[in-house]
Length: 168
Image 1 (cartoon, rainbow, N blue to C red):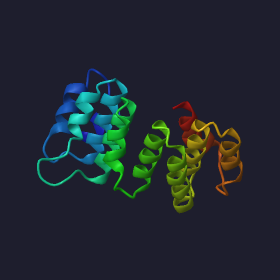
Image 2: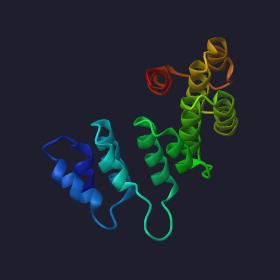
Image 3: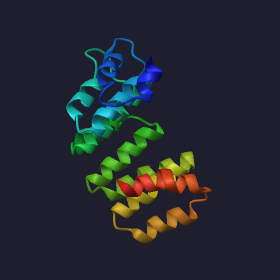
């Protein structure tokens, strides 16, 4: 049932998908897909409710990343940054860099993005580093990262991670 819900995220299937995502013990991939589906439709309050911290304990890092993405998309930049400021994973670094850039803290954003690129060395990290520089109006720097990162970029990378970064 979770696979079927994930493959058919349309308005007609939404009640079943909502029930799956909100059920106790729902898998994180199902919940994450539903959070993204809600956020893409501007239903950010519902998306944030699914990523709210529990009464006891704290959210897992992947949930904090999704929460930060929703908060950033709706303009709650300081709160988005707080959601992932303690996390070290690559997805948290992406959200942290994007929130910092949106706050105008370009040097901090570039440092986070450059650190991620040094650690990961993948197309998504190249795209993030170039995006942060582009947002800082350092167009030459963004071009330099794309051309000289040392990461071999293929057609799928240009159509995927890099295109998505510059479409934001």
